[in-house]
Length: 80
Image 1 (cartoon, rainbow, N blue to C red):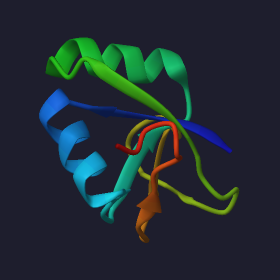
Image 2 (cartoon, helix red, strand yellow):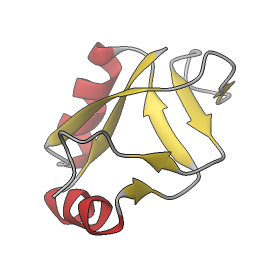
Image 3 (tube, rainbow, N blue to C red):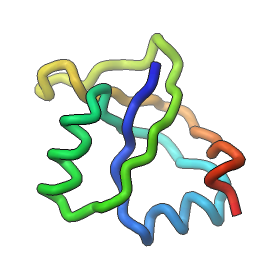
């Protein structure tokens, strides 16, 4: 499942230094919700990630927010 994780430049640098995103890893299933969240929080970076199809949906976000409770290894294109 393709999902969209919104973060700040400072967080992206932290992810790159560690090589992964530590759990819980939250993301949006819909790019439009990710863009809306990005604009409302001031976090300008949206990462497209591939989550397993059985990830949990978060309640209260119209079924658009998902979470994974394990570390997410960054793809080589995002590693330093």
